[in-house]
Length: 476
Image (tube, rainbow, N blue to C red; front, side, top):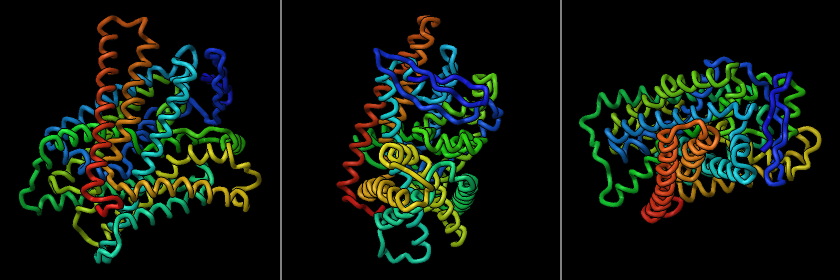
């Protein structure tokens, strides 16, 4: 990998690391670093875990786990995620250098193959998250439609197709991340709207509804697979909503540096953003980043907890995987909440898809002139439209949001957030550890490796079962 060193203008200069005569080329970053307070970074991280995905946790986590399993599981997932992030924070300054990207850190410790593998896993993570976002957006469009015309003429796949088209139009109209600007503030506002409305309406329904059934649905082996899948959903809950991190990471970039960023072969992936936030925080970096993480995993998780627990309390085992489909209330209030969820999802998907867009633009676009020239516009329509068409097709074919969350957790969250973090810490700090500390980290690597394999099998099994039950292009 290319470790980066801090430059005098607050950016970072590239350096080179040779691994078995192979050089990992990592482009420079145009980010200004060492500027933000720990509270600002903590607020950014807090907003990041409260994306529209929070509307699904009552149904995808609490329903298959029940009160005891769901509450204990979320608390454990919070503690484990905090621990894994603190390990990465402590590795931010390693070997006398600040590593501002997650894959750079992996490359520094392991070499080129790990750098490439980490990057590949991140892109798998992005594709899965994007597919889930389109399912969410489609569910929001369907919820609005049902409010005004519940004639069952249109099915969920139709709404997913509409949502995919809206995402494509937005992707073509916003050529790069720096062009988002005001949309980032709107995203935060939309998040606030649907969280407050979902909580208030669920709480009202819970007070008015008779005794609910909180029994865990299914029987036999089905419950086992659901429990394993829900465990992956638990860790997924802390792997989404990275839009505000990118906002801060790009904040304060002047026009020259912004142009360099657009032209360079780099846009941050979700895991990069967690590490990049460490680059924006003021000195002492590790201490301030730990404060931000403690804020995120205490006060920051309260909105997610509130929506998740109140939603399950109000509707029990009948809770929908999209909470706003379960609530009752004034038509215009529910419509406002669903439209807010849709718009926030469109913006968030664009952020998570931007690394794909940037790679294709850089490698194949031959971009010249302004973003609205005929060549550049047609290229975005073809390439971004094609990428989102694949996402939309998969989302409509298998619109099982909980299963996609489980599969994403198994394929990327477990390996990158838990397995890799513990093993990197072992590799970097192992010489100074006692035998008990080493055993603890190896235990984490082993346990999370087994959970990752089990969760992947479970997610695939659940997707296959649901495909048989509902058939493809199901209307959920």
